[in-house]
Structures are given as structure tokens and as C-alpha cells.
Length: 358
Image (cartoon, rainbow, N blue to C red; front, side, top):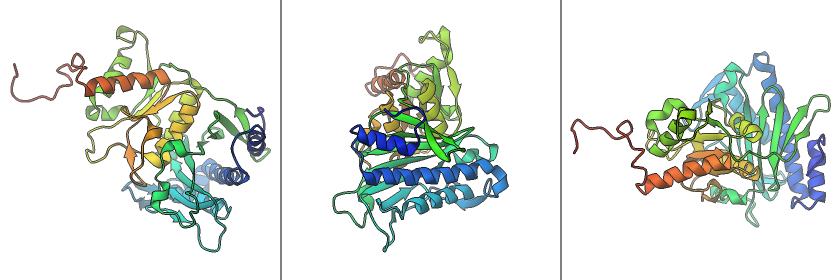
């Protein structure tokens, strides 16, 4: 583990010296990523002064409103990393297809997958937003990557993390040997180690979910949330606090610091979708971070990192955070699927008809 106060670069070289299996190319790629995050942090910190905030440019490939800052951050990350010589391809939320490193530029052995600006609906109200990234090894001999080369399970990630643009800009990283947080120092113009060896408490009494979707949730999720809301008078016997920031990086960061659980579960609001969040560039990197910090990440029925991706922008349900809480919801899903949660299925949650049943 690095020494508190080390710069990001010093930390990476120290990890390598201590036997972490990272090579010079990966270190150089991570250095380019931190440069991109510095640039984005500066733009975000300017607010409306820079003219980028609040401007919409239409819809993205997912049919969602795209802000000018979404497109700009995408360009910053690509521009910072494409000439580095460590990548042969990039995939982001803002692009329908993968981005191949242009001919004439050096290419490397890694693939970068990222959400350039998570939580962009919060831009106008000055609430924490961020960037999420995942790094994979390209298949041996890969020069012109295809979509199939990116469809690797989360267990294949060699590095993952996120940048956080809040009251302080931060970068959180895992190389598969724990999780470490770095805070941006304007004086040094560098991210410096401030949160070494982050560990999520096994049990905590905060949960984050978009309660406006309650009517669409599956019974296991309704059961869990109902028990939390009942507090000391319910089966859990303790009071819970509910949070919802609508920025995944902020939700996960809170969990890393003080525990809890974040849920964007499967629901019936849009039946054609298996979930809301994207597997490759949201769920997988965050699942790796959370697991490396001692937590757990699941769809409710399967470990996130074990999923075999089927498409570049595949959506899945996601439940992550303190191990005991995630495991409880997984048990509720299992009981529901086996029909063992009948006691919970009170008339409030049953499918109703016009006719009384015996």
C-alpha cells in the first residue's frame, strides 16, 4: 500500500515495485486518464463561467438528453488517451460503436471502456458528478479491435475506478489489490493519496434507491425497502436513512466512505430492458471497486463480475454495497424465485383483479 500523500504517479510506481502486476504501459495509460480527469475537473469547477454547463445538444444514442458537457468530456478522454500508444480501442457511453485508434498513431495492448460523465442530469444544480472507467487487455495480436473484443466479463478487468467532481476533485482506483482514493491538489496540480486502503463496513444503515419507481419494483426489492422504512418497529429492529443523489459515482463514493447499499434494480417500468445501468462501463468497474473494498455487487440473482457481456451497451440491474445488505437482498430474490416469500406477498403487493378469489 502506498504512503499517504504520494502523488498518483508515485503511488503507481510504488505498487509496481511492491509486486503489483502492472507494466509501464498501464502506468502510462492511467497517467493519461488522470490528466483527462484534471481537465474535466477544471471545466466542471467553472460552472456557467465556461459556457459549457446547462447546454443541451439533443439526444444521445440511448435516446437520453445529451448535454454539451457530455460530448466535451468524451472528447477530452479520447483526445488524452488516443495518442498515448497504450490503447488499440475505446468504448464509451456517448458512442454507438467502438473508437479505433486512428491509423498512423501507435497502438497498444489495452482497451478502455468508460462513462465520460456520470450524473449529467445534476450539472445544472451543481451536484457531484463524475467519470467511470474500466481497463481491459486486448486479445493477443489485436490491432483492429471489434466489439467482440470488448465483451469480456468484469473478472478480466486489470484496473477500474472513477473520478469524482465534487467539493474536492478525487480519483478512486483499484488495480485488484484494494481500493485507494486520491484528492486533487491545485498547488501540486496532481492527485495525491488521501484515502489508502478503503474498506466498506459489512453492515450499514443507509440505502439509496429511486423511490419514485416503487410501483415497478419486484417483490424482493419492495420487501427489503419496506423493512428498512419500518426501522426499529420492523423486523430489522434499527432505523435506516434513505439517500438518492442520481449520480452513481457519488452514491458509490458514499458507500466506500461509510457503508450502505445502492440499488438500481430490475423493474417493470420498461419491460424490454433488463435494467437501467450499463454493464461494461458502469456496473463492471463499480463492482470491481466495491468488491476490492470488501463489499459485494449483484443483479439480485448473479454476481456482476461473472456476467458474460452480450452487447456493447447492455443494461443490467445493479445492487451493490455492504456485503451483509447485498446478501440479504440476494436471499430475498432467491426466496421469491422459489415461491418461499408468500408471507410477504400481502394484498398490498399482489396483482389485483376485479374478482374476489377464494
